[in-house]
Image (cartoon, rainbow, N blue to C red; front, side, top):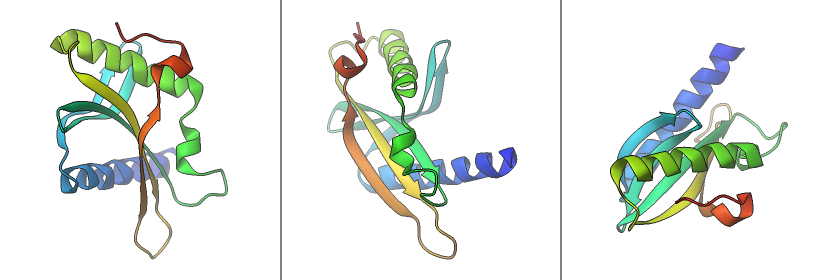
Length: 129
């Protein structure tokens, strides 16, 4: 079961990366991990840094994929974003937090939803710098 979940997650991330590239994003990091958090993709669109979380499901029995981006997950993404911005000295850049939700139903094309500005730092009471 765990290997199936990892395979689904890997497939979702591959689909999301292609989606980002096809839509003009430049992917600058994948699975960026730091002590306090992790984010699936860091991409640039129109000179804006996008921290992108990907959630993939095969069905909605357990809820929609985007619903899995919980408060604690948002905090981990924000911590990774903070580390990335500090590490690369990108304080002057605009940034946002996106979620890409992917449904992988049996025997049909994946359904992809891109939620730009899916959450803000003020809703998780965290400052970037």
